[in-house]
Image 1 (cartoon, helix red, strand yellow):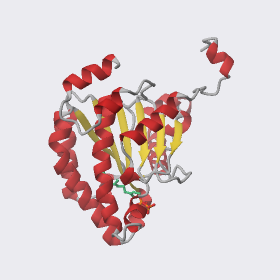
Image 2 (cartoon, protein in one colour):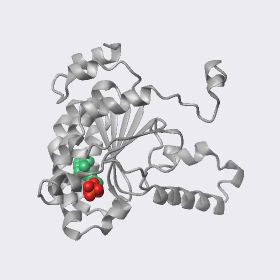
Image 3 (cartoon, rainbow, N blue to C red):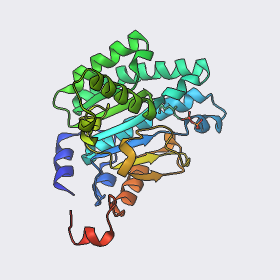
Image 4 (cartoon, rainbow, N blue to C red):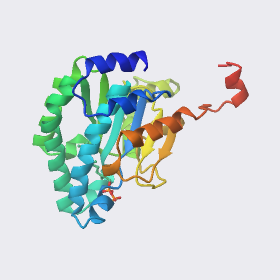
Length: 267
Ligand code: FPP
């Protein structure tokens, strides 16, 4: 068992995780994982249920995966819960999802605080109801102190929209004479994204077998490893997470260099 896992095990006694299974994992733990939680609708429809039931079941997977990541020592977990484009879904599904987010915020409050998980919701929050925005802001504040892991939930989020937002901000600063075009660096751009204070994205997981990024973290995904599983999100559990982490551990992350350069330790 790693020293980190040993500490975490002593510290966290009430997690809904299979600790023995997680302790057996010997590979690298990514600092930042993002997940496209896909397949809720299909999970429900294949059981003759309404799609919203699949989203509710998906919220249970969220708890498991959040707690497993917290246990393993992941620093940031970013979940794609609702895209900018999802506003175009049938009205009853959209309102059902908004209600579910509200339920999640109330239901998970105690566990997030107890387990030192800081919640941060990213996206165009102006489109959410004032009531939901208020609940989010309150929980963000309540969980901010001493957070050992950040749970970023992307709601009303689009990667292109995020890039456009930053671009407009930069254009305004240039127009006001506060910035010169040459000052526009990768670091500056990074510092203006929703994910500014988080580690670089290491691993993006997508469930339900689709081979797409679907407008998620387009800037941040640049050098991330990608793992796609056929498992539908409501069935995703610690075993599925460890499958993704094992695959991640076996990758050689080259960041544009050659394998030989990496072996010789060249920077
Ligand atoms: C995509 O599956 C999933 C969504 C659009 C919603 C994701 C939301 C949850 C997992 C609910 C809980 C989340 C939080 C953070 C509380 P889909 O509906 O597109 O599935 P399909 O491709 O099978 O139709």
